[in-house]
Length: 466
Image (cartoon, rainbow, N blue to C red):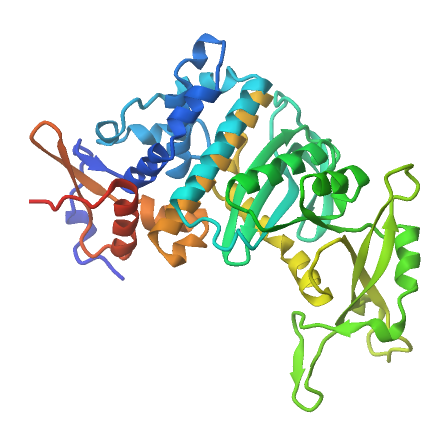
């Protein structure tokens, strides 16, 4: 592709007050209004500080800015470009929104989280967010260390995180998140919690899991719920909380001496080859030739804690440890790496193990966050960053609902794709009479049909322009 004219002869001027750079925000914010975002925040959030007045308007501005691509407080100025104030009322300046975030207390953050959970339940009723949730749903819980900079960040401390497969210490804040998904649907966020950077992974995870499972129930997950987590959550309190909430658990077990002894007790003929990455189908044997095998054994965990012992299944996946085989030498006996999972899942061995591996889907949510509103934790105030995190979760759920209403492709697309295809659409605003507004969108827009489907679902059929 090249320019059809000499760039030196192309004139440009920033003098059009009727241009809207992100016309796709119209149906997205209309969907938020239909779901009752402002009403929920008005009813739930009560801030005593003077800068906390009209929280429903300011939270709406923060969500709209994040949906449009803002990842810092200063970026909220994008809501004031061109004719944006003509389309959206109550647009606040970035400095006002920053003062509003700093007025939050921890109790106000919890109020905003409750409003976000109610909004998600309403979005699930208005859009096909979780198809198949009445049969099977998965609640995934994980934590992420988010790097921050500067000496005035409250709560910042060194914590462990993985970068390119290596565990390193990173100075930042720790984000605990829970998502819910089904085999047919992409995950949505049921809960968030910001913690200090040095927080232990499992700190507060038991109550958080119960809250997330309850939120999943209100979203229509009336069938089987399996809660998945990694080894950081392998403790009696977390698993007991999942059971009390009426969900099954599937948690990666740590390789302690008791687990190692249980694995050693598995007979050699109990191992089953599975279809694993790099597996090959053998037509003669009619089986998968793979370096991964699985087996299970009954196991009682946490026996050292009085009254907290839990008996369930220990599902073990073993993979050839090629690092222990010297280059150029034959293998005297196979060396294995073991990956145990402690679970009471009602499913058979093979689907249970495969379902647990799908816990990695929560990493896609974290990647979407860090490529969007959570690129920064923008304030020095801990509670302001916690409120920012909650608004980011609300935004992600709102974009997921908008994608579900637009097309099957956008129902599973990442937030950056939804912003590029459905939100970042230039439009010209024209007024006819005193109340009728017309958005003139680009001709031959490559996502025209999807955008119109979203607009019609959120705002009703558009009036045809004259």
